[in-house]
Image (cartoon, rainbow, N blue to C red):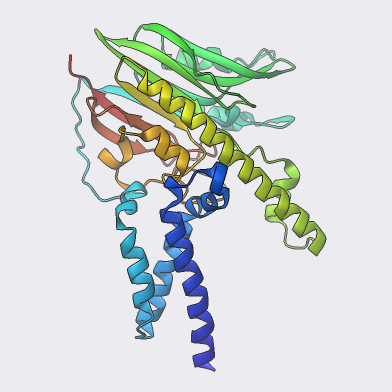
Length: 361
């Protein structure tokens, strides 16, 4: 009986190992042509954990099958640093550093017809703890409802004098978009031209840091736009077989569409960055992991601040699927990154990112 169980488990082990191998090629496989490969890249952290558990199981059993996952995991060793770092951080970055925060606010708690003011209160209290030189907010929200003015509250708390706010979606008295707020003068600003949907967009802001011009990109790439019934399907256990099939088809279709749209957006953003005459800092919610085609396109020759100065597990998503790293701060190689942190505070379904930089004049 034990031999049969081992055979069945090793069969599952082989599937998990092959899936991890496919995940390794996800950054190089265009979703337009090989959209199904993107699923494996998205699932990389979970596939890595599953293979590690198989290694542990076979090790306890003193079985040679452990070599299969050991080899598979070893093949992709260069990807580990994209998700977990063990470098010691400098607790005292240079005092002259420019401090940047990037955070998906999830519309400050607006959830359908219900506005959860406790969420916005937590964010305001967090912002009041420390001042930054630049704030990049995705899923930014403002309203003209009497008695609540989030934009005015954030301006007061951050003390920022210069602002670049673009609203894409509006209904009733509510506005949704993306915002870059700065303590330093903004000399130019604009929108990267790609087809936008919901609050998915990319803006650029040229900021004068004491004579050094740096272009800050702030982006929110294509979302899945799950509806209520999609979330209910993911959480349900008692659906009929027909409902499960229909639900699964709808989920797969949404992922496929998002993978392809993010590829289109990433190509346009990559070209925009290449045409930029200034060093760049790229902030935002990419809605994709480091093992994705869109991330690889946008990153190009830029430095990932987490890989340079991060420590610990780099997961940035505070939602249904843990371990996902989908929010980033990237920068030109000539910009020196002196500190990076993912602030693991429960403020929205994304954690805030913090990075410090110094610029050569």
